[in-house]
Length: 289
Image 1: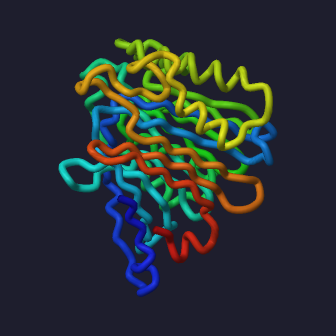
Image 2: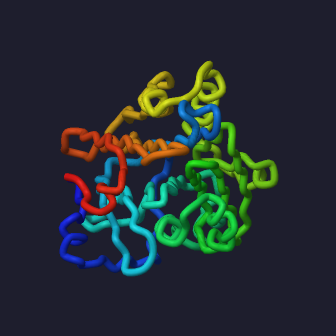
């Protein structure tokens, strides 16, 4: 069910957002992005396939008392809204994240805070986020990608607040669930087969693409099943206990004009639903059903 609070906006009621949200326990995700002339029409594309054991996701438009309005995809834990796993704000800044599951249990259990909502509420561009890198010191060991119309960036957060940043204004970025920065490779104690295969597959599809990218190309990548039930970009799970893809988040942020979003959600026990719309001024002021 899509919950977009247009009525709250119309009657002037604002939502209070608690910033200390906890990181979603999505054990496996695939993140990828492209920016610059490699994007048809220029700008940026950002995507996430959210993988885990079956769990509901909820889409919500958040209008905080202070800060920027943002659209977020949230986990649902025991019937209550959990952490934000992907989002975009009214300035056209989008963020997605993934769990660092290759760490030892001890290294991965130090802190559990996610910064996704704070990024969207307080920042209007990739440049602004990267000027505030101390924000990520509060994060649990995780991987983040951010995008706006001018740039994309990948942030790896290691234990004890150490971070690595890679930024591109014309090129591709990709990530799964283990560290790929050379300075952090020694942190990988248990790289899963799925994480390795998904990383190789998304890299090969991005680098082997012979023309400029469109949102339709990213949708096709998100649906790739070449490596089977458990190791593909779109995972179906070889048994009920196995993780599978439960949502796809893709945004196109053009140099000029309003962003476009493609969202596919496969909640357990429900028919999958798709949202594909332009996030123009009327969307942010009136919402949509």
